[in-house]
Length: 369
Image (cartoon, rainbow, N blue to C red; front, side, top):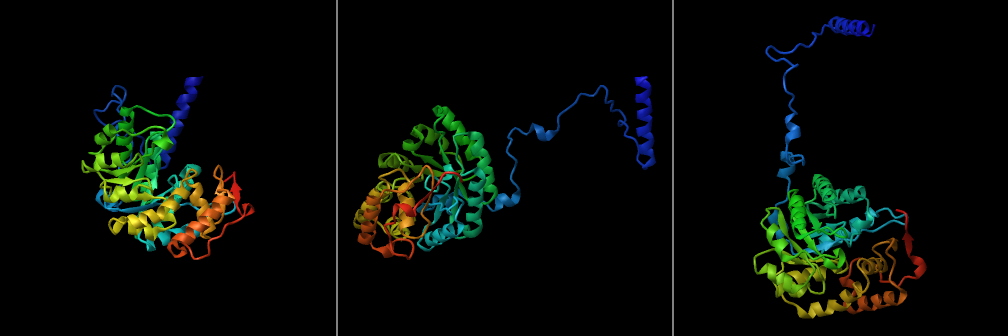
């Protein structure tokens, strides 16, 4: 009974095929499908599971040498609306101020930009927005690093797809790995495109040792290292011809002019980009460096970006909105900031409004965003 139904069903399909003018499929001559060994499609056998880039994407890529030439890179702040969403109007204003005052590059969604408080959709959107609006005037380096190699690969693919010029990659934090694991992680993500390696043991809990940096330094996509360990480490690398950016504003003057660093990836340049440009481009200037030290010390007395978020709100260039767990500095620190601005000169800071102290009630903390 069952075989009869199957036979009738098969005849019905054959007749339906013929009625539409289609020829039933037949095995090619000499190709017996009953005995032929199955082979997987060639695409499945590609050993690298990253999709190859289209020629247009490769053509539009920024060269590694272009990234290596940068002197002043600002770790740009991400401002918020009262409901916790991005304030793109304020963000664009901050970007214009950076470009007009000589910054050559920005880190989007870094620690200062609170990338760790963003979803990846938000993160990639902000990178794409920055590229689309400002990418012809400034280099956009997206923080697409992660402690998960898979996540770093995916985020970097997306970042380069929306046009970022380079990626910033940190070493895996919390779930730390071995030195060989660090090499494997970085070699994998470096294959995506021009990249800056970021070493900040105070945040990751693990120093990237020089042995690891030496091994990956030959990769053609490695632009350089943002180094936060100190100037002795900077000198060790620059003596060997590596490109290094100081990751510490309080050390960047000496890093640049005494220890051979290319420049700085700066937080304080969010506030005084013109002065930081002068510090990086106009030769040794210990007087200017000393003048900036009270501001730098104030900015980092609490973990970054707490001080920066408070300062930009007091300057009136961003709304006083904080995504938790960040909260504003206490009143006495806000009063101290007003005095620092007056000592350096309000004209040297971003924005045009008078600096204000702001009351506790002026600040908004957002937990769901």
